Amino acid sequence: MNMQTFSFLAPQVVFGVKSAENISEHITRMGAKHVLLVSDRGLEKAGLVDQLRAWIGKANVTITTYTDIEPEPSVDNVRACVNFARQAGCSLVVGMGGGSAMDSAKVVATLLGNNGDIMDYLGQNKVPLKGVPTILLPTTAGTGSEIGRGALFYVPERHSKEAVFSSHMLTDLALIDPVLALSAPASVTASSGLDALCHAIESYTGRAANPLSMPFAELGIKWIGKYLAPAVADGSNLEAREGMALGCLYASIALANANTHAVHALAYPLQGKNRIVHGKANSVLLPYVLKALAPSLPEKFANIASWMNLAQGVSLVEGINRLSEQIGIPAKMSVMGVTASQLEDLTQEAVQIRRLLDNCPVLLDGLQIQAIYQDAL
Figure 1 (cartoon, rainbow, N blue to C red):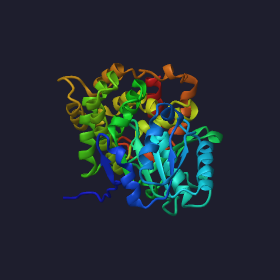
Figure 2: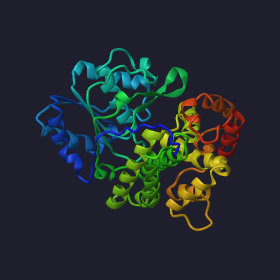
Figure 3: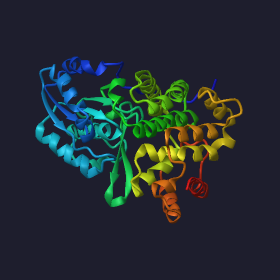
């Protein structure tokens, strides 16, 4: 047997309906005295921030709240939160929300334990020390930020989305309670859920796929394939929410250990130049990237189609297209404001994202990438 060398990382995970209600027990165990709760205005208006504050308060700690995290936050937005946190002097950061809030919480915690500015740490493995502890609570089943080591932000001066990526940002506890997703709108459920499916498919088909990551990818595909459409159709369906939360967890573990590839690489320029949110950018591109890769991966694509329980004779690409239409994902980038005149610039940016493209099972060149964009336009 000639098996590649691989590593496997995952944080402590607590999963279950109403598990968030016991967050105070974890805070007490971690010995924190002052908690910074990072979230967003939408969850504050929905009452989830006040509810979480009440659960945290059972630990008899000081609680400071920051809810000015924007959707797809910029480095300036995170800087403001970091400055706020440094003045407050918090010893634990709790992040609740989608990827934006959780990514921000991870970087805030990191910078509470390291000097400098967020711009100093953009890139891979530039964080020298672990920051203060974190607890992350996702309210969507999608980004997988609660499991991963990366955090993604908009850099205005470069019109780009860039990541801080370090094992020091692995959270101390991912607290996954499907109840927290009950208030997520159908559109968010759809795009974040298809993003999670991207994570599972790309981590299964990528060059870094390994014997530990692939079973998690398979389970992610199975659970998301079964529960995504029901969760979009009825957000109050707790069984569907629980199934999606578990499917996203499986996909996120696979992602954290085998990475994504071409879908995410091509989506990043859409996020930076057109400000299309992460989940929607990945969702619209997924079938077109799969179409380009299909001739090279017949066996793996057949496996994925089987795990998604697609009807006999329905290809994976066709199945993804049907699912996207069913849950309301736009079929073309032009619907999101992308124009033909942008394709060359998008391609030039995408080809530079080697961290992801080098993991693609087919090493795409600029002409192939531009052809995918053209097909998706």
